Amino acid sequence: MLVGIFSDTHDHLDNIRRAVAFFNERECRAVLFAGDLVSTFAIPPLRQLNCPIYGCFGDNEGNRIGIQGGFKIIGQIKEAPAAYTLDDNTRIIIAHMPRQLRDCQGEYDIAIHGHTHRPLIKTDDSGRLVINPGEASGWTYGQPTVALLETTTRHAEIIPLDTSTPLPTWDQERRS
Image (cartoon, rainbow, N blue to C red; front, top):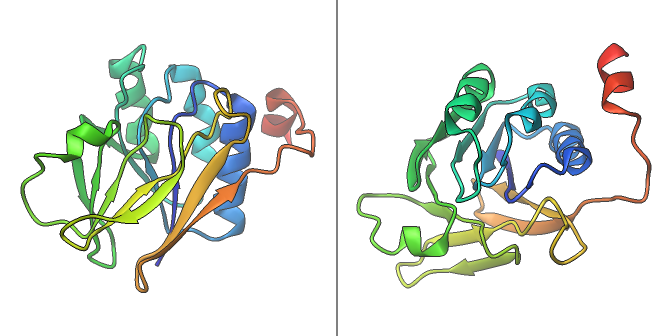
């Protein structure tokens, strides 16, 4: 099962739209979000996803109630650490900050986190895959990234978002 992963959008609407387009092009069956969407106005581009989205709140969400309400249309968002079981029975835990994973009890196969804005793929001491997709915003390090995960093989990769092509305005995109 192909899964898209992103984090730390920090209201960068164009890169949210780029991430959504990329996940749709790759035909992801689910998308995981590791926090810091920030504002409710960042939710409408996520409605273009062709699959459900599962996530957790970050430490910079401005209106958690509004974000949670918006997510009800497209998937689920919970406080971190958030546990989800995907359609293929892969057990995922999503946190925003790496330290939120330290004391996680229970069974899970893959851990996702954000917060550092630095992409990372590693195996923890228990042999579980840990993925930080980096920052979708690109605000901090200048290169927005997302991740792809194939759950059957546990293969993950970091993908730079292509920002070289201008996007139509959000208003133009909604009217087409």
